[in-house]
Length: 253
Length: 83
Image 1: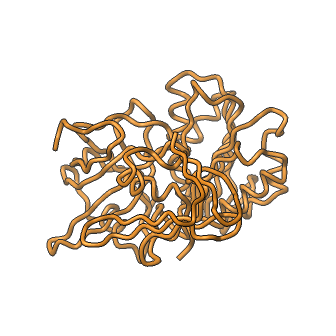
Image 2: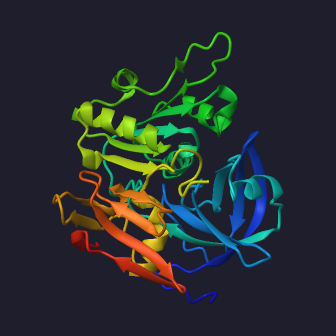
C-alpha cells in the first residue's frame, strides 16, 4: 500500500526506470524512481522481484550504487547463465517498471557521523558498487576521511566507473589503484594479479591508525582479503565483509 | 553454488523479524561463536535458506517458505540479540 510503509517493515514498491547507463559491455547502471523511497545509507542494498507472465517470480539483491541523497541507482553485471541480470542489462528500457524493496542491511554501511578512522575499500569485480556509493557519499558530505581503494578487475575494460574513479586522483584524500588479474594493457605500470597479503601489506593503512575496511566481491576474494587483513593486525570488527558468490550479485545468478 | 553471507538475507530476515538483522548478534549453540548475522555463512538454495556458523559450520537458522508463509528454525542459536 503506497504511503503506508512503516519504518523497519519492508514493503514491495514499484520502481520506474528513469535512465540506463552502460558502464562496460556487460555492466549497466539503472537509475530508478521510487515515489516512497525512504532514503538509504552508503553501502546498503535492495531486493528486486520480477514476475513473469506465467506468475513465476525471481528475487535478487543488488547493491545501491548512488550516495545517500542522490537518486536511487543500482549497477548490474550480466551473468551469462543468469535468470535476472540478462533482463536487467539487455531488455530493460527507460520507463519500464518492476518491484523492489529496501533499503536493506545496516552492517555493510559507512556512516561518517559514527565511523572513525581512515577507510580501506577493497573491491573484487562488481563488488565495487557499494564502495562507489561510499566514495560518493564521502565527497558529498565534504568528509576529510582519508580513503584508499584497491579494485581487482579482470582487465582495464572491465573496470566499472573508471572515469569517475580516476577523477578522485585530483582529491588528495583519495587513492585509487587497480590490480588487473587476467589481462594488462601494453605498458601497464599498475598492479597485476590477484590481491594477496603482500599487495595488501603495501597498500593497507597500518592497523595502528584504526582503519575501517570494507571488502566486497566474490566469496573467494572476500575470504582471502579479510583473512589477510586480520593477519596484518586489523581487528575482525574493523573488517566489514559482503560476499557476492562466485559471480555477480548477492544471491547468485 | 558458493556460500554467501548474512547480508544476502537482510531482506528476508527483515521481512520475518520486522527489523534489520544483519547487525543482530547471534551466538552459536554449538561452539559459542558470537557475531553479527551479516558474518554467518549462507546458502540460499539448500533447499530453503540455510545459515551456518562461520567457525564450526553448525546450522544456526533455516528459513523455508511453506504455502506462502516463512517458517524459521532457530534451534542452532543459543541467543539472537537485535539492536
